[in-house]
Image 1 (spheres, rainbow, N blue to C red):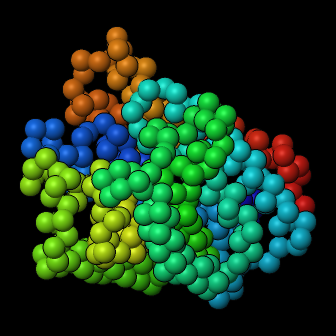
Image 2: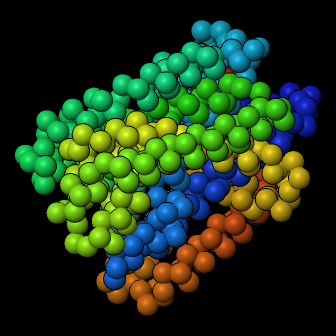
Amino acid sequence: MTSPASASRSSSARGERLWGVDAARGLALLGMVTVHVLPTTDPGTGDATWAGMLFSGRSAALFAVLAGVGLALLTGGAGKAGAAPEHSNAQAAWYRKVIAARAAVIIGFGLFVSLLGASVAVILVHYGVLFLLALPFLRMGAKALMLWAAGWVAASPVLYWWLQNLLRPSAAEPPERLWHSPMIFDLAQPGLLGLDLFVTGYYPLILWPAYLFTGMALGRLSLGRTTTQWRLLLGGTAGAVLTYGVGWVVEAQSQVVERMRPYAGSDEALQGSLETGDHFLPLVTDPMWFLLPMPHQGSHMDLLHTISCAVAVLGLMLILVRWLKWPLAPLVGAGAMPLSLYVGHLIVLGPFWRLDGAPFAEVEDAVLLLWLVVAALAAGMLKVLLRRRGPLEALTHGAGIAAAGKRPR
């Protein structure tokens, strides 16, 4: 983190850069909240809903990419020509201790909030483990990190495809897995928990470092420069359109839809599953899987599509805060306290809405979503005005400082 003195010497672009990153993270947070409240497919027809079409898979991927951006900014942002800032061994060790302590706190929260009954694929444990996986890479520059990201995108879907098919009893039967978000009780079965975290669960960590390395590489760029921002927006948009187009052609020209039809209740449900990635179609058993950009699949096209969307959103938010700084302030503030708001919405969804006898059980999902969005934006605006960390962000920050001690000079 920069000191107040060094921050005051930074250009105004750096302030915009940080606001843009937070705005993008706020958008990712609201996207995840949306798909946690609204159905991604129509309960009656099986068609994909607007929430599923827009946010399914993309919001979580954006959240993970921005985790990488945040790690890069925490450790100094961009050095000269995209290199990592120079740190002594003592300073690098200090950063690793801070990040490891924060990761431990996030993992701890994830293991317990999964007990709330929110019926959500909680990302926190995976998010914390990603932080731990990032520790050996904190001193790398943009080029090295981008090579790691490219290599991970190229190789990890092949390994994931092989393991998934190896572990499946049959095409129609998924491999053994938790079928819930990791909980504290799952520590009693470490083998199954580890398999779920890395291969069979909702956010397989064989795949997700691709998002983390991409974000870390982006965080080593001069994100405050207008040319960088426009390159991110235009390049990300082009990649998103191209990869989605590849998927459309594969669906239209191959027999993958026909091969998946026996596993869906209707043509509408089949198409809805293809658009939102509901984990029930055995797409990973199909030879065309690698070219399908369907959400939560982990194929090459899925990783490339969701990474492209994340890059485009980051570029867009970095540009918009130049012109709409205060109108976007509530979104910026929400994005600066993601852990507090993420845990907070899980508390509302479980004990207060979804569980039997919950006080808000009769509230319609669209109304509840409106309440949550308004509350998140109001909390975000308050955070910006008070210039204070969110409550759980303050806790993770304190844990990091307590573990690492005084920052070496």
